[in-house]
Amino acid sequence: MKIISHLFVLLLLTSAAAANDRMNVLFLAIDDLNTWVLSDPDRYTGKVIAPNIKKLASDGMLFTRAYCASSVCSPSRTAILSGVAPWKSGIYQNALENNDSPAIKAATPLPTYFRQNGYYTATSGKISHAYAMPGAWDRELPHTRDPRPPNPNKGYGPIHLDEAEMNDTKYADFAIEELGKAHDKPFFIACGMFHPHGPWFVPQKYFDLYPIEDIVLPEINEDDLNDVPEQAVRLASLDQMRQRLKGGFEERIQAYLASTTYADTQIGRVLDALAASPYAENTIVVLWSDHGYHMGEKMHSGKTTLWEEGTHSLLMFKAPGITEPGERCNRFVSLLDLYPTLVDLCDLPRPSHIDGNPLAPLLMDPDLPWNQPVITGLLEKWKSDVYLSVRTDGYRYINYGDGIEELYDCQKDPKEWTNQADNPEYREILEKHRAMLPEAVEAMPYVPANKRG
Image (cartoon, rainbow, N blue to C red; front, side, top):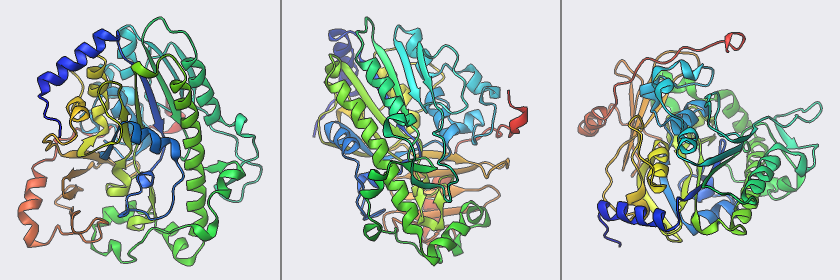
């Protein structure tokens, strides 16, 4: 175990930056990607073909317990890119004018801040989501969706396009082109994959990797929601789960896995381009997924929950001179930590507005003491009540307001099947987690599509 003081970490980072000028950043995002790629036996026992993501994890440090600030695309990404927590901004759902939030309006977006500090910035694909970032990019290829196949019967299946015509392929092409340029100043290059976000249409060859007979269904408890409050039940997609119990759910998982492997292939092309470039030894690579994704667990299919599958996210760093190959950090961290971490690693002054904790000390020593709870915020769609989850080492606590709660002992019950909120044996633990809740601002109002700016 490496014993390194925080001061020494900062000195090391400063000297590394001075020796190599400023470090570059390759900022990779994947939409709706759950943590099956980690092959966590408590969550999923089937195969996931993602060699490039897994190789990146083995080349640097994998954070096995990373969680999103919100389990919805736009609020999660807005929190990452602004550095402002949802419970301070009021951003908990997609259909909002994000910059109407005073806290967001006052924040400097992450890529804007890098550009203001002398970086060349470029982006392709889905990085932001409804969060306007004026002045963020020198060059941009915005995200658009692939056209759906003619008359599709389902939300998934083989696509009618050649792979080269698909948008995620083009986003990777853009990043590869940027990495092939001669840059005269440090760069911040972002590349965001839309897949495995639905609809799940990818080339047939990716479906062929996952024969239906080999698909493993995640284990469920049909009585799982009997001990949770009605707010939690309303978040679950029970119609889809009734479909699963009738059969045919294997096709959904096949399509999701096929889309995951397609996204992994494009990420691999970008990583290969970096490895072949002159920038391989002075570029920080960070890969993250914006939130988790249920495939039946807790009687739910999709995101937008405060349980483990909805909040657990992928996060990995490869930082030359800082991380070592094959490292895993089991400390609980938040995607909010990305902004302060990248600022510190690149030796930039840390803006005062950002929340989150810089992860540089953990990148140097993954076993350092780390007792930060991870908070995740959520609303039911178009409602105003704020729901909050607190994840700590061993427990998950969820508060729906008005004394409505869930508590799970994740050490004894990793699938979160038994709500202990009313168990007197857990009263002290419940009160301890209750005290960790932040004071949340009022949620920003939903804006109908025909009234958005």
